[in-house]
Amino acid sequence: MWLLLLLYSILWWLLFMLHNIYLVNFVSAIVLMTASPVSAEQKTVPTDYQRVVPLVDTEKTVLNQQITYPSGQAKITSVVVTLLPGEETGRHLHSVPTFGYILEGELAIAYEGGTEEVFRAGDGFVEAVHTWHNGRVVGEKPVRVLAVFVGSEIVPPVTRP
Image 1: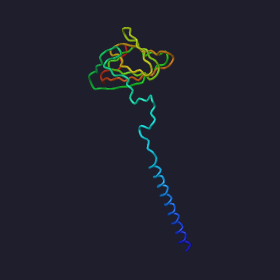
Image 2: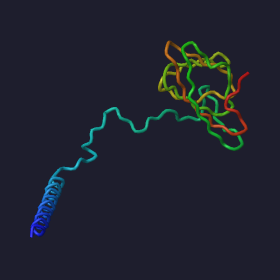
Image 3: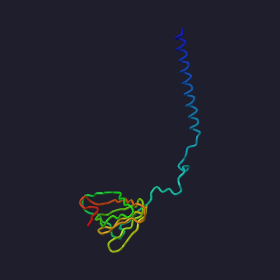
Image 4: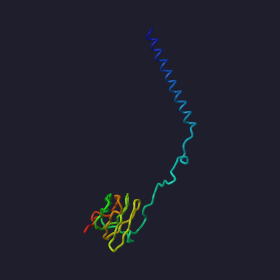
């Protein structure tokens, strides 16, 4: 008899709990249905937000040279170059189109022939090709440059004397 009473009590408790679960689910569904959805217009977007920020759109290098691609199997190489205050890149040239982007700091590049260009954090540029040049850090902060070489397997991206 006591076993039957125990089973009856457990069954009653289970039914009570299931009823409460259904009640909670029902109330939750009502709350969710009456809550106003957040539309794309209601989301807060910073006023200075730009999904796409143009950096460079050109057919010419910084020295106004026409960009041409080397022959052979295409190869893209990218590096981040870090120069400490007082450091220089050393005299070199690029035989392939090279995109540079100053991540931080300020870099002055002196080109053969007397031209000098200064690039600051956020500046993007297409480097001169087949022209000797040297970069040097301007100021007391390190410089970090992203360099992307668009070349081929048979043409080295950097040549040094």
